Length: 236
Image: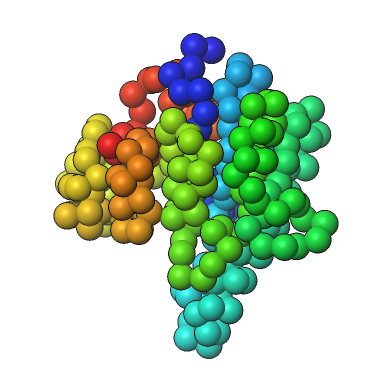
């Protein structure tokens, strides 16, 4: 592999890990994703990963007004820790060195996040999974992904989603929606496009970290993006 980026942060949605099951894990698919990521790591790419928790709990949405926002968000953080534990074990079964760093102190789940420690692990060739978001309520895992990318000095953020790029409108509702090959942070914010939340987009813009949005339905897309193939949409 001739990788375009040396160090990346991959953001994977929790729902993607459930695949067609819609909740929990589809371990055949999870294994496929981990194999694709391991191949990139074996080729010398330093890989950090943030996983959402939507296959278990989606904060305010699932709280439905019955769970206070802070509690709902903390439940979402715990969901991301569950996902990191599962994915980390799959990596280890594949023979990869994978580590979990958490934004909250949860004994037995992982080590407390420290940027210098994360970079040290990455430079050793470990795949580093960042659990529990930013550790604070009111911030999404998208924002946590950009924050971690900035802290580890990532060259790019790979946003692996259930959709194959950024569109002018929701393509599931509007068949006339147009996919962008490239778009600026400013235009994403001005048009309120559903790439990431506005906090995450602004943080990526302020730190000049390109965001590549692509479909995870074919996990090999991760390697193709890293090699510089034009898939999905690049936001920069």
